[in-house]
Length: 151
Image 1 (cartoon, rainbow, N blue to C red):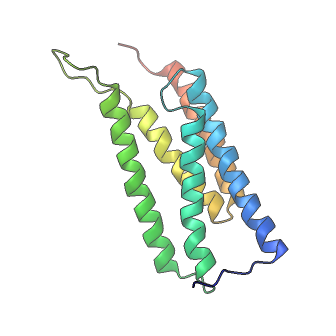
Image 2 (cartoon, helix red, strand yellow):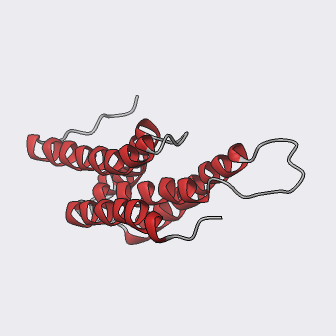
């Protein structure tokens, strides 16, 4: 039988804080997408950010030395895995039977990818980086949409 890890109250609170920040930054991006009536909205972005934070917390928790190789491989795996979610968003957004192929959903796919990065930052304890990144992401999604040329 596997032994369970014993964590102190301060470690528990630190994990809770990191996961809470991951949910917050995912929600910041997700609310913007939800308000734009995009298929990947609040819940999707929160789950992606939370999942990324959980995945990054695992090698941090099991390796007291915080092995940078393990953390780096985890980040690479998250980025690749979330890329598949983004590809699904792009493919899903292309209507079937179109005479001319168009690409739809790139911005939503990029927002999902950024949500994962924000979750990684939160999971690593870089809460300030996660919050700044979320604010910049929403600024890009909101402000630059207004100056982007429309077809």
